[in-house]
Amino acid sequence: MKKSLSRNPNMLRTMVGLGMTLIILLGYAVYSNTVDTEYYRFETTNNPTTLEIEQTDANTWLVTTNTAITWLNVSIENVDENTALTVTSSSIPFHTSELLGTDNDGRMFTCKDINEDFELIVESCIIGFTHTTMAYENDIAFKSIVSIELPLGGVGYLEATDLQDAENLAQNKVQSASKINTWTFQLTSDGEPYNASKAPTVMIVEHDLTQVNEFRLDPIVETLYGVASLIGCFTMMLVVPMIAYFSGVAKQKREDRLRSENPPPVV
Image 1: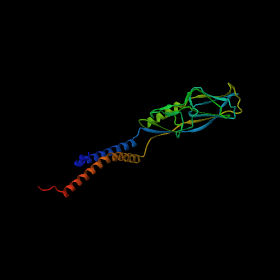
Image 2: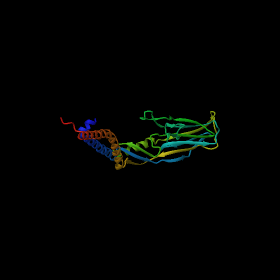
Image 3: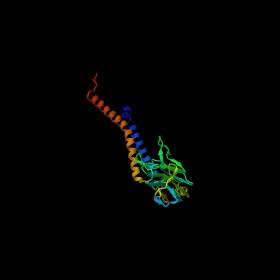
Image 4: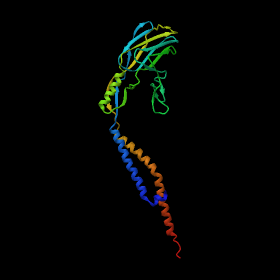
């Protein structure tokens, strides 16, 4: 390789030229994809609301909702240790897990996990129309998510052909989660009705679509990052050939100098 490069310096020029051409083309690709994107950012309200529930029996309460809901949390204090809370939905299955809201490798656990191959998002909570939880240290704290398709933080992203299509998709997400539903909360102890001194506290987080915008990054910054990465990659690729080339040239010059200083004897 050293001999090839030292005898044919055009090879090095060709490699450098091809590298610079690829850097320019890929840099333009990064710029164009940053400016013209098919992803859109939508925002929703993220309002926590405490519901007023109606007591129907000594140990049973009801409430009806008709909005798009993510979090539904129920809490009650100062109950017996063996008290159980049963939450029932009339028409919407909802998700729950003891890990909801806890730290999961630096992010909050929200019923969605990435599989071992980091390819698919899988649901990892229990889904059903009825869930039961037991008291812990005389308190009950039940956490659940009704719609896992809505953005829990109020900001979501989707892929669409244009802004109008993105607005329709975002609106459909919210509307599909907005259903009339009756929630039932029941307290029992050892299978018998439990008369609590006060009603449970029921908190939900409601969502309404507020705006949809095209997802944009700073094209100049992203292009600079992309070009810098490409230059770094091609520099690493060219280091070895350039070292071989210059070492070959230096060796050739050294051999020429030695031959000039020590000419062959004249016969």
